[in-house]
Length: 100
Image 1: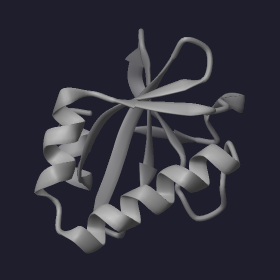
Image 2: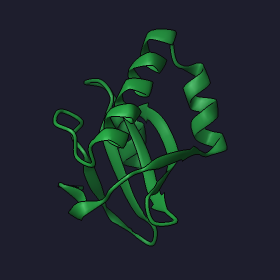
Image 3: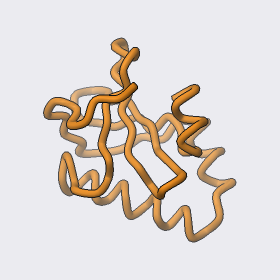
């Protein structure tokens, strides 16, 4: 279902979707802090170690990527306008794998 590495994608900014914002608000504060840290790591390094940066197969227009937040949570996004990550969802691995 995924491809590791994601082919040279570079992220310089993020833009949250309404769905992402809604899901983010429902997370416990400690998990929100973890999500914020992972996003900052992604902005500093296009493929930071330990994020499990993946391109999801089956999504080509647009390309959808994910990063691991914890052992049970992922964040999905697509790259828009060159290097802006449009944050789609933050949810459990199973939820992201079913509907990123």
